[in-house]
Image (cartoon, rainbow, N blue to C red; front, side):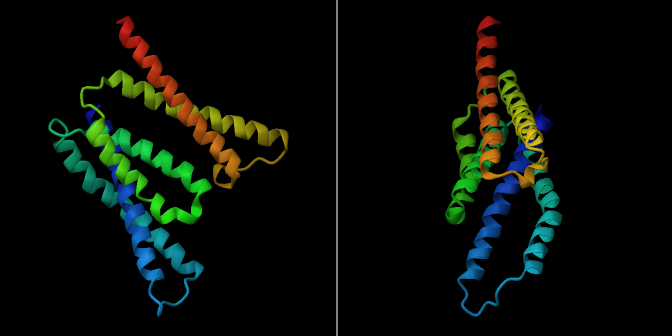
Length: 190
């Protein structure tokens, strides 16, 4: 589980840092009055540069997380990061005008997870929570695809409407909570 938590934590930390850095850089460039208007090619170039840089940033986080695992609360970083990215995804659907503030949610969630999630949490609790979240994504996605097939308008997740994306994200949260509660009940039985 050491490798799994280190990998999840490094992915969440890299995405959180990327979100903050990219949006901070964009805010600096937007505040410059001499700046030329952005065209679609520049936005695409930013995306491609970030896409290439992200694996290297993940690797930069992964190696220290792996080495510091026994001494540091990497579980808290991983779980906080996953929750922060989920929360950012949900809020950015509905509150896109304040996106500059929302990009700090994953990073703050990682810090909160590091501070407040106890390193002593059993693997079964975290495993059931992550399994519940994965099941929630699968079930929510299937429900939306099922509704779309009845309307004869199948499409991918990236073309879902705001309500459909919210339904999938709420299913992830619901199933994650159910997984956590099942793990708590299993611990009592053992």
